[in-house]
Image (cartoon, rainbow, N blue to C red):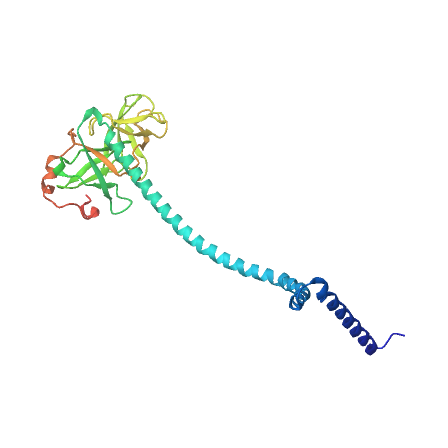
Length: 299
């Protein structure tokens, strides 16, 4: 038979009491240790409490670490925000520096450009385009005060850009060779055969050759022939190989050499008089103000 619960509780309590008394007797042996009673009490208490402290520390440490982790994450988030702002500023400065370097390179290239036959030129900067993307015109910051007249050729480091078709004292309008109103007398460099290119807006130039006896090969260099523009200026490159049909003119396309969407600085050839220039075209505009609305003066 098992002892009753009451007797079991009394036996357990007696055992725990004896164990505690034995522990205290072993701990409080003041004579053998030579320590004061207070020291012994403190040491015994520390011995009893240490396991409890270790258990509490075991439970609390992860919580403290979690709180510290949250604080560190918040600090890192603020630091990331600051770093991102600094990166954006550096990227903006880099873009500005790249733009200045590109502009300087364009200006150096246009200044180093040798015009055909060592003709006199005036460097101009494009400050505006047409009123819409369909307008094949550009406005430059040079006018009759700088020797600009209607009909003069406009070039850049890549080749022929267009011709001046409107002038004031301080500004001029350039009609690009891609404009349907602009025709350019040309010759194919490798065959020396002549023809005429005509603008077609955003499409490639059309090349018509009426007396061609040899084919135009893809990639052939097409130059001005000196009839409408100074001779020897690169206009573009044949886009495909084409032969003349029997009894018909040779018609093909030419990819312009100038990058019209990237134009910034150009040179206006002032030392050559084109055959198609109309001197009277500048008279009513010499005293006119600078352009303010490119679309309002469109022919």
